[in-house]
Image (cartoon, rainbow, N blue to C red):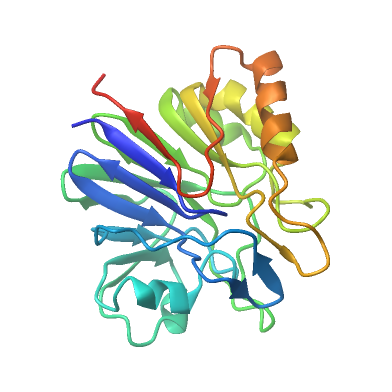
Length: 243
């Protein structure tokens, strides 16, 4: 059946693999707190079999966006996040090392090096990444910094890697274009898609800037020339045939 990957902006990605549809970190609104969206994105046209949430920051776990997908959709969330999801009827908490079966695909729950607490109260839950495995292997990093354990995930067909943030720079627990390019050396994917760039920003700072994605592609060519980088527009898709 192959795979289709559709970037809906920020860290929201639709993954269709072997007849199973997943959505990562759905944030679909024009405004989230103090952040403004540069481009709109419609919810997936096909109801997802599950939603994978990487951590509890507001630009990754957005309750109104989740509600748009249906309150009975299967939600896979970090352990401890259930308390923020009242009214949702199919919540599955997990942690690094977990293995899930969703339809005909396997989802490995993996480490992410990031402070995933829900502010301002500081309620804690771990930050996670996910590797979706079927006829293809697709890594969704969530938010993370570079860490040695990435090498254990290799090789991969696709890596979905954050390359920026919503401010002028990223701090600890994040990947910038340089860090994301270095991650490719460990992950050894065939294809890399930069995410978490250009979609949201503060009101007085321009959005829609392609510079982080382009810098990532340039450094990837230098550090991991065997990896094909695909920069998608919001709503754009990448199709992969059968191996």
